[in-house]
Length: 77
Image 1 (cartoon, helix red, strand yellow):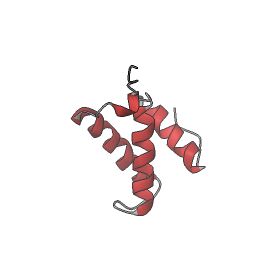
Image 2 (cartoon, rainbow, N blue to C red; image 1 turned 180 degrees about the horizontal axis):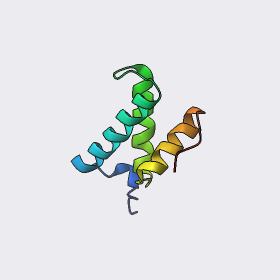
Image 3 (cartoon, rainbow, N blue to C red; image 1 turned 90 degrees about the horizontal axis):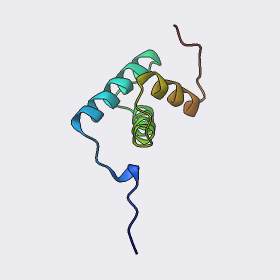
């Protein structure tokens, strides 16, 4: 039996973590969420989960985090 390797199992690189951190800090600043805080930790976990699922685009990450939190708003273009 072969063991399946899932994308979730891949370790994040320092570049991956820096990108996720930047998204987290911007999102929390724009939504008045303190860092560190329980809500900040939840948002960070959502970002990491989405990133590990293959969402690498910063704008897409933000939209999906807003959707997960029920706070979707119109993005400036």
